[in-house]
Image 1: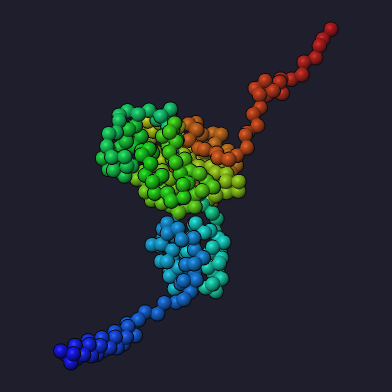
Image 2: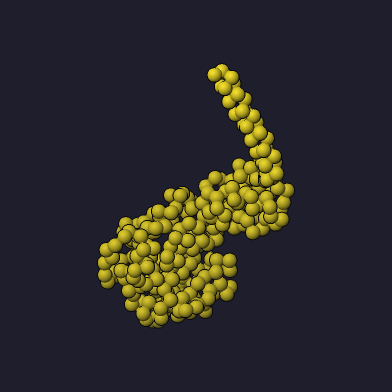
Amino acid sequence: MSTTILFTIISLSAIGAIAAIILYFVAQKFKVYEDPRIDQVEEILPAANCGGCGYPGCRGFAEAMVKADDLSPFYCPVGGNETMAQAAEILGKAVEAKDPLVAVVRCSGSPNHRPRVNEYDGASSCTISSSLYSGETGCQYGCLGLGDCVDVCDFDAIYMDQETGLPVVIDDNCTACGACVKVCPNDIIELRKKNKKDRKIFVSCVNMDKGGIAKKACEVACIGCKACVKVCAYDAITVENFLAYIDPNKCKLCRKCVEVCPTNAILEINFPPRKVKLETEKATKAEPAKTETK
């Protein structure tokens, strides 16, 4: 009996040893070398795994940077230029600083400006709603107001305004990861250059209907009149499909386009109040001085 047990133990031990040797050689044969710099780069990344860089998580982003010869296509929106500079130092490569971005909501269609013509009674999702019909108003392009953008934001940088029914971006929290941009079925959210003092000018409308139809659906819609194009000295504004667009890279924030927009579709954000001249002062300056005659 004892001999049988001993033989069994020896046999199993021998089989285990042989299997271990085989596995070792197989592992050596098929092992994949991993550059240790991948771990170093991943360690300095923010671990947000938001996908804003265009890769599946920070690990995938680190691997791509290590393998690349040029870092110019890469950018971590959460970590920003500081993180990219650290990664470039680890990899011994050059990287150029890029302008920070921030999300903007290109729709001002609150109930005061865009009356509801029907009521949606379905799943509370912009994606589902957009696939079923064109929305509760006469504008089929505007915000659906069901908050998909809020649900996907991992940084508490966007919320729904209960009064206007529109999403509001908290600029200080926004990392420009682009999650809200991707999830919006009507493409009303855009990443734009974050200027000094976070000042920005943009057309808060995406309606591509003709002027009369757009104005009927929403009183602050862009009507494609091109008045803004005529006053822009920097060729920053184009009109296509009856909709104006301001190029953030060309715009010099002069605000002339804002003044001439007949529907107030162009917004100016974080600017100081304009100096308003009283009509009486204008009239006084325009009138010639009167002299008394005896």
